[in-house]
Image (cartoon, rainbow, N blue to C red; front, side, top):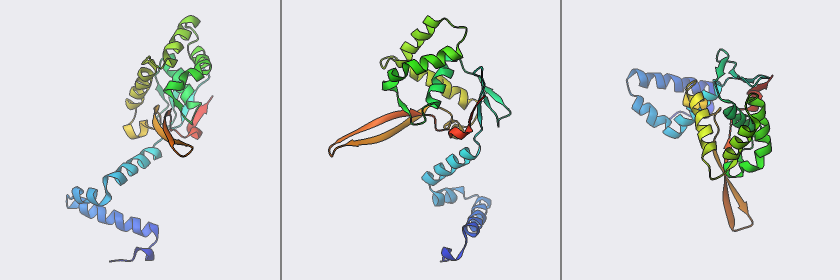
Length: 194
């Protein structure tokens, strides 16, 4: 058995690469997968997706573009853009059941993205979005997810979509509860407002 502490990380990576190519040439991807393990493979896929992230440009007139994907436009309706902008503005995440606390902010975003729409219809739409008994917010998030998945692979899209993040909270010694936050995990340095 070789003492790996005698090698640099780069030398170990080169040996690993050589061994992986050898197993692939022998058509033994099954052994390669067993050696790497599924959890590590998942982490590697996520890391590979992170390397492919594009800057997200949001123009003054609220058009969304993936700058590093040939300036591909993300085609969303004004309501979807408003929801997206709200979650971009809150990298700490928001629980759907507390969306009513963000009613005013969401209304501002919606009024900005839907300039030609009737204000009463916008307010009615926001009422549906912040109502915890209404499924409107889930429908909007699903539509946003579908648009991003049509433009990129699922691992990359996971950084752009509004997805769940559960956080454990402990109060005192006996009370535990979970915050079911919804977040956009895209690093904010990749978001450019015109």
